[in-house]
Image (cartoon, rainbow, N blue to C red; front, side):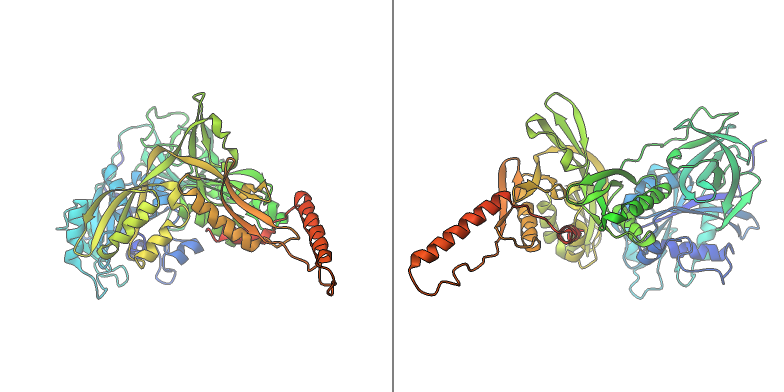
Length: 600
C-alpha cells in the first residue's frame, strides 16, 4: 500500500543576496517551534562564521519542521535553505530538484535584482510552484505596488496573491505558512524501487561523509546496502535521520522526506552532488534526472608565504576538499614561489571563500597567483588541450587557435550610470546584446563577457561606478576563439613563471606595462641596471629599468688632468658591464606578495 504523502511539503527559499532569506528561515523555525526562543540566534541555518559576517549562504542547509495548520492538519515542512550566489548555482539546482515549491523572496525596497531573475529561471526549469513573498514591508522606503509591477513585468509571475511579510517583526508569517500548505503540492512517488537524490554532503571527522538526501521513492534504513548510480560504488548504511535543525536519528527515511544518510563512506569524492542512491537488493533502473559532473571554472596557484608552512597548507587543503568536492587542487612548484598548489574553483566568490577559510580556519598565510580560466587550445595536428596554467601552453608555432570561456551577464543598474557601465563592458572586450527598463529608475543590461576579463576586479569596478546599487549575475555560455597570447615577464633576461599570463593581444602592452612598473618599485637596486620586460614570444612589448647604484669613483681626484677622471669612469663602466653579464637578480618574496596581493 503506497504511503500517504499529503501531509508533506518540500520547499526552498530563493532570493537575491541580502533580501532576507536567512532571517525568513529563522521566523519559520520560530513559528513551527522547531527551535526554542532562547536557543534561536540570527541566521540560525548559517553556521559558518563567514556566512554570518558576509550575510550570505554558502552551503545548503535542510531542516524538518511540523506545522499545525488552521484546518487541523499536522503538516511536515522540509525546508532546504539554498545559497543565493551564482557561483553555487549548481548546488541551488540540485536543492530545487528536491522540492515541489519555492518561496520567491523580493525586497520591498530594492525590488527585483539580478540573482532574483537567475534563481527564478532555475525554479521554473524544475517546474516548481512559486509562491511570491514581498519582504521588509516595515521599511520606511518600501514600495509594494512598484515591486509587484516589477515581478509581473520581468518574471511573468502574477502578484495577485503575493504575501507581504516582515521577517524582522514576524508580520505576515502566519499567512505565508498557510500559503505553503495550500499552494505547494505534496510530493508524488512514481516507483516502488528506492531512489534518493543527493543534494549535498559534508565530512565529519568521526563518522565519515554525511550525505544530504531527498527520498523520492522507497525507503532506506540502517543496515541496508546502497548503491550510487553515477559511480556504481556500494556502501552499508550506518545511520539515517533528519535535521530538526540538529541531527536526529530515525529508524528509516521514507518517501517524500528530506534528511541525511551516514554510511561507511570515507571520502567526499565518492559522493557526487546530484547522484541517485538506490538499494543494492532492489536497484532502480532509471536514475533521477539532472546529474552532471561539476567542473571548476577559475584557477589560481596558492602558495604559503613562508615555505616551511607547505605541509600545513597541504593538510588544510585536504580537509577543505573533504567538505567541498567542487574545489580541486594539484601540487605544483614555481621557481619564484616554491612549492604550492594549483587550485580550481567554481567562480570568483568560491575562490575568495576558500582562500579566506584557509587563512582563518587553518591559520595559513597564503599568497595566490593571478586567477586564470581554462582555455581550449587547438593544435595544428587537430589535437585539443585544456590549459589552466600559462606555463603549460605549447609552442606558439604549433597552435592553430585558442578559445576562451564566455559568460552571459545580467546587470541591473540605475539609469544614470548606463553610459559608464557600457564603457566598462566594452573595455573588458564585452558585447552588449540588450537593455530593458525595469522601472523609472533602473535598467537591465544583458551582455556577453570573457570570463578572463571579470576574474580580477570587474565586480569592484561595477560597485564603485554604481555606488553599490548595481547587481550582477552571470551564467556560463560556452567557448569562443580569440586572439590570445602568452605574456611573460622577464627580469634581467630570465622569465618569472609566477607572472606569466594568457591575455588578449591588444591588452597585453597595457597589462605588461602595469606589472613592469610595480616590479621596478619593488626590486631592490643593484650595482648594475636591471631590465624588467614584458614579452610575447621574442617581442618585447613593455620595459622598465631598475637603475644601478653609482659609486662616485672620482671623489679622490682633486684637480689635475681630466683624463685621470675619464680613465676611472671607463674602468667603472667596464666593471659594471662585466657584472651585468654575470650578475644574478634575486626578487624578494615581499615583491611577489605585494604585486600578487594587489591584484586580488
